[in-house]
Image 1 (cartoon, rainbow, N blue to C red):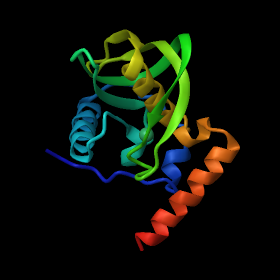
Image 2: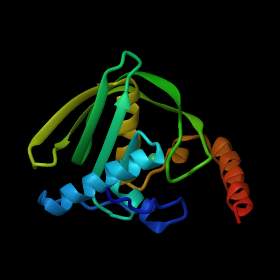
Image 3: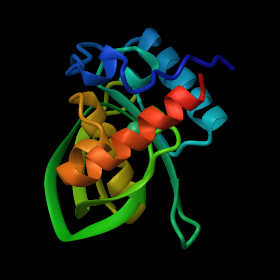
Image 4: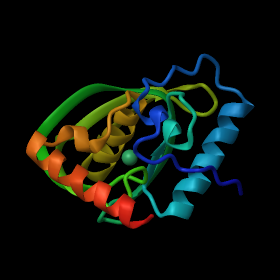
Length: 170
Ligand code: NI
């Protein structure tokens, strides 16, 4: 098991547009394994490669639905091909912004396309928590954090709380 350091808001890599993976290699698969290890160790349900300092379009998710169905996926070069359903609000947090949580509005259903860790094409239709986690992680690949999806007022409040938490932590 190999843990990588989780980058915290303020780190430039979180604001970069990650580059596409041209060829899926053993290095990509090692990155994915480390990302799963790091995500589980931190108690998260999703992680994007920039969050461990790698500016490449790779994400992992492991989401349990209320009915017990489990969705564990690693995706390379994922894109949201379709958005649908109603706009739903649910609480989100982020391993790169510890201590901050807020309601975020997102489409309830998405179709995501990309490839798996063997380089084979994948198309995934997702709803509920999985749809939310995939959108959150794909945002990371574009340098977008969930607080960017909030109103300026709400974002300002959370940033003040964040600064207080960080300075308090010394
Ligand atoms: Ni996040």
